[in-house]
Image (cartoon, rainbow, N blue to C red; front, side, top):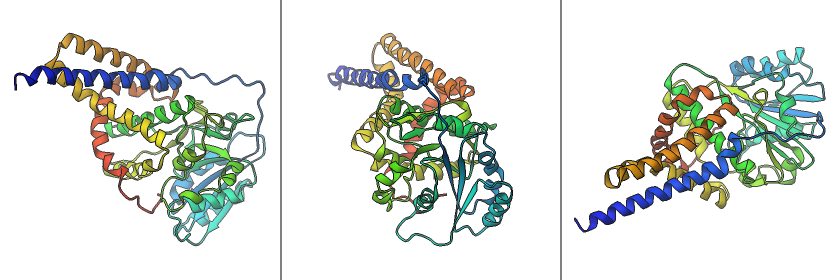
Length: 375
């Protein structure tokens, strides 16, 4: 055992160094791009016609609160708001009819049947896209409200001649309590990844709470036909299939955010996140590798740090830890500033450690069969 002890020290320390270097690679190559992002200066600004699409199922209360935010947008160019009422059994239909009396730009699509073999939101969303008059589609959910009256303006401004996809940020409202911080940090952490990867030319997903793409892109790729059998993925899997370094841009102007109400208890949030993670196994191999490598090294960083601290020269180990800590703190601060989540910064170190438990909780979701519902 005594002969093996020095080898164990060296093995653990070497692993700690490799994990740290890998983490620094992600922060230096990917995440710094969002932290220090500056939108390109456009030679000319255009106002494209836009079709906003919202799918709803038994969400009358949420529509009553949030839909006006999409209907009163300050956007002088041609636009419409399509609400797809997917077989709702509550007062959604009557509520939409009342809205229609005031807002002529509201287009209501009432679906009264299910699509056999197409679980999730893909069928109603496909019907909404089919009904869309304009080429640029802007998607959000019934439980989301634009952060400003310039949401349409800012999101469509992300398009240029080559752009077919614009990724936005879907934030959660700030509330008291630590659960709210967990939810918002996880949302920030996910956005740090998919927005940074897009800036690095490796786009892999978007979020349906705030996502835009061209109708021609959807039709050219035969919509969701190749993923219709999967309950989720109407946002992330579709983007994973069609996004490229050339056709994808991001918009992180605060006026272009959407806001949602976070879950009020941990179990509801766990169910929501577990459903989201069931689609990751269908990503392209390159995306799966990059995301898995980041998560694995993130997970093992702190255990290896503690082990190395006791088994190796603590001064060297602490220096390596502080190098990663300092770089990570800088990137988090700047990225949180960009996404208006700066109030989370004093907690970032604790929330980063919490991610170890987060990975343990949600790892089984990556191989579980997803549920067919989309709410």
